[in-house]
Structures are given as structure tokens and as C-alpha cells.
Image (cartoon, rainbow, N blue to C red; front, side, top):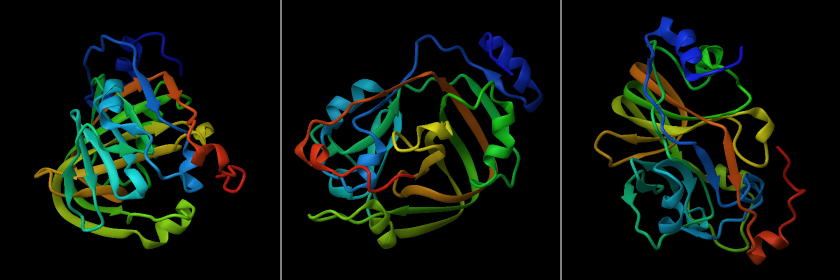
Length: 250
């Protein structure tokens, strides 16, 4: 199925009670570096919050020295540290990696109860006009269960991210209201970005969250914004330029 216009997509998803909300500007995902750098231990921040916020109001990322998961909700930058606490970050804070876009709701889908991170693609992908482009996502409502994680600050020489993940700290939430933000990216972006569904969670109180490992929906709506441009800056830092990026190919 192809999308000749947003009206065409509306016809596809109307059976799920989705709602078309007009989008007035071209959307672009921005990253300050390819994901392959992060996988190989390039954790020194290169982009400030002040710079990053010029490119959007919603996204996911990692903080300087891999010190906590990051997410951007309604233009506010949050750091989830390994104690599970959400901290609001300031303009001079830095990130080595982030995906951000100027999110504008285009389509809303009420998800059935029982949808999980593992099977959300089985339900949503068939409603999309194509799976070969990007979509910014926002899931809002009540979740029966959420498992999120954060990772600890790293020290040089930095290990690859596969080693960092072995020390992740997990947080379980039951019957929790909150928001998840992130992206559905096409599989071919492996090493440049994060393929498939990648979302981070923030509870309604804005006190806790993290990178989402599992979820089960209860009363959740999914808001989607199609994004057809993807911009990645190639870092000029010595750390990135000296990295052996052939070590981890995923």
C-alpha cells in the first residue's frame, strides 16, 4: 500500500477509530552521530541541550558518559539515572547520541488492551502506509505493566555498549499511567540508528522512567507522526574519528 496523501492513510486506519490531525511542516529526525559509534563506546557528549532542542520537541537518547537514559517530552529533557529518578536537564548539559524530531500528531490509534512491545508491530505495521520510512511515536495512557531500565555512568577506557548493558538496572511499574516517546524506524537503518520500535517511558508524575524493555497496554492511545527525512551528523571528535567502527555490526 502506498500513501498518495494523508487522506489516503486516514481511510486505512479509520476502522481503528484513528483521527487525522493536520501537520503543517516537513518533519526531520536529527541525530548528532550514528548509533554504531555508541555501540562501540563513543559516550562523550558532543551536542548540548540548547543545540539539540533546535531540532525538535520529542525524542530519546543517552547522556554524557552513558550516565542515564534520556528522553524529551514536550520540549523538556529528562535524564533517568540508575536509581530510577527522572531529572530535568539544562541547556548546557550534553549528549553523545539522541534521536529528536518536531513531533506533530497526525494519526491517533486506540490500542487494544494487551498489546506488548514484542507484538506492537504485528498490530500497527499493517496500518502504516509503508514500513520503509520513519514514524515518531507517542503512547499515552494506562499500562498494565512497564519494565524500563537505565545504565550507569562509564569511565575511560569506555567499554562497548554490550558490556554496559550487562550492568543495567531495571525498574518495574504496574498499573501505571504515563507516556512513552520514541520511533518506529525501518530495519535497514541498522548501525546508523535503532531499527524497529524504540521507546522510553516517563510516568505521569514525571519522577521515574527509562528505556523500555517490556510493556503491556491497558488503556493506551498511540499517536503517530510520519517522518521522511533522517539527518545524521558525522562527529569530528577525536574519540569518534579514532574508533574502530568495524568491531560491532548489528
